[in-house]
Image (cartoon, rainbow, N blue to C red; front, side, top):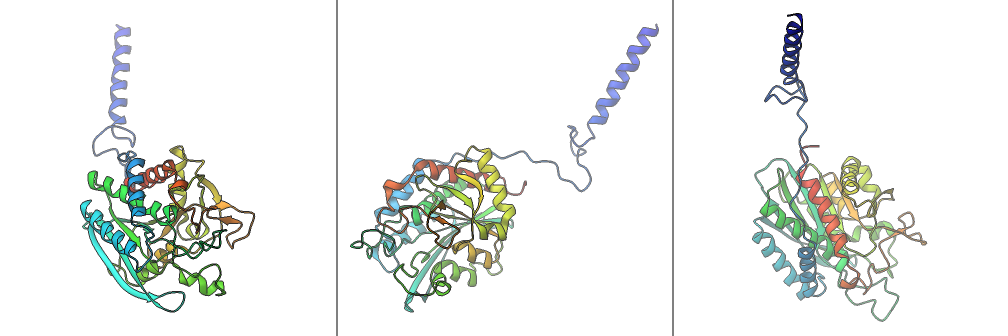
Length: 348
């Protein structure tokens, strides 16, 4: 009789304990497992599959137009295609056109493209890349080709290719946040290596499209939770370090994105190594009110180039910036990491 009472007491205690667990933060009770003022932990979202083959097709399509230098046929043809492609993916497209002053003091056009996904959503993310290519190969060792325009396979086309493939994902699987993809024009038409222009002035001759965007937002008062710039994200043997301006402006975002990259097995590409800050479109994205980081290929150099002994690869601003120096794996890695960040925004 005593044994039966003991068993009954134990069973009753277990039932009470089970009931209490349903109301604790890690329990399974519906609507009663939240600590007051604290949201429950959200499960990590697995993004749709980013296709490196599709990204490569987008890259090759850009190169088929030839160099995308402002006021050339290739530039005009690529612009028309980009606008159509963004609309085909379901984006609401805003076209920004103006004329600004180039490094020689002449008027030069700026044609930015803003592709907005889920424009009704208040919480937004901004992704960007420049779509023009360099007007000269001023770093080429062969002086006979230095004044020819380059393909810009890595410097320009790679970032655009990744963003277009992400646009395909956004069309098929809508993220929880709105996304604005911005293609900046006239980023790479700055003063050439042979110019005697002082660095302080020379720096201002770059990133003309993003400079214009920062002063003329496509939506007055536009804000995004964060911004990610992609520049030179497809080169063979790429290295993505924590660029200094990004760390200063949005170090929490950069650390969060890099943590995803390392968790996903891309630690050999996304290194926990800080570099000096550089002048790139993200500088003006930050000035425009969007806390932004730059995913950019920066490699150790024996020559000081004003970037703490880092440079952008031996083919940077040369005729070798072509399809032969593109690695589809690098495009895929960057695309997968950015997709992971976008699809998990709001739950961090």
